[in-house]
Amino acid sequence: MARMIYILNGPNLNLLGKREPHIYGHETLEDVERRCKALLPEGFDLSLRQSNHEGQLIDWIHEAREAACGIIINPGAYTHTSIAIYDALCAYEGPVIEVHISNVHKREAFRYHSYVSGRAEGVIAGLGLDGYEAATRRIVTLNGA
Ligand code: DQA
Image (cartoon, rainbow, N blue to C red):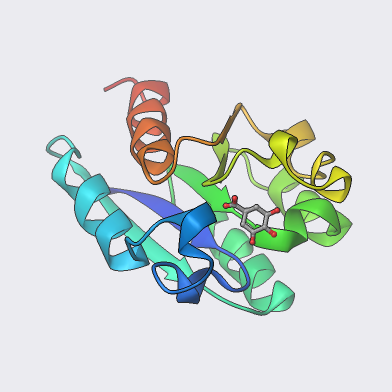
């Protein structure tokens, strides 16, 4: 059975490609899925999901405890607010990579702090959608492949 990587996306990221393209670009979450799937080695698969609801993201993180060999998460604005997502990730034993499409450190001060970073093996910000690809490669490496 293939080892599964979860790519979880938080609020407003369903609008990727349409939302503030000067910040987030013109590509969509479907492009993220296509790009990341293209670089998976044999024996790996991925499940890309998006929700505007904190509880749904938490439920998927819980599900990942049994189902996923790594989590890539762009929590959107929950990055800066959600202790609950941090706690859920702490209950997950595999590797976690936090991704932000934009460079959050070049933007408003309220984006400088992330609750998630304290649990993540790695943090990527400002590489656009390339960040998801780098995170996928890293999860594969951390799984010894
Ligand atoms: C984001 C950055 C967050 O500050 C913002 O709330 C988002 C997207 C990013 O990918 O750059 O929704 O996570």
